[in-house]
Length: 192
Image (cartoon, rainbow, N blue to C red):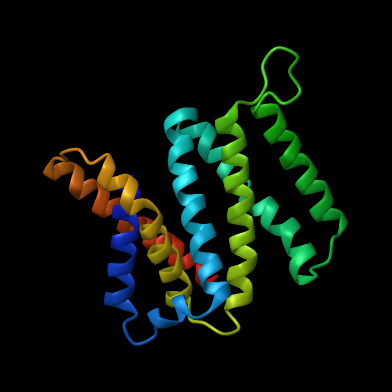
């Protein structure tokens, strides 16, 4: 929880430092779509970090990265993008790979609750991508990213406080650096 909080605090710091003229924090609490983006995005980040603990970084990340498939499929439904052959074949292949990875077709071992949580987080992230695309018509990238940071921080503050443990100086450095890299990647993806 502390790592997740650090990510969101560093993200807000980056936005304040780099985009202080563009970011509109007040809109996060008055615009429903920004709030939805923030809440769902914050929950999906927390769920992803939780699945890393229980599934391992490789499996959790593979499942989480299927958000691009879910985003493409949800874009057909929510914003009317075409559903062509390439999307159908690519999505089918990726989802088959996901099913094979999680043992969905196995008679003896089935996906566990954290596999399901990882898939739900990926679907949520796919929804967020579609929402980001819609928000670009009215909001700057920094405001869209700040929504995730503000609402994500609100979501994980209480658990972080309840499970607070001492953290060494080198661990703080790593968390801050990871937060900077995550912010740079997220802002770039949001802009794109």
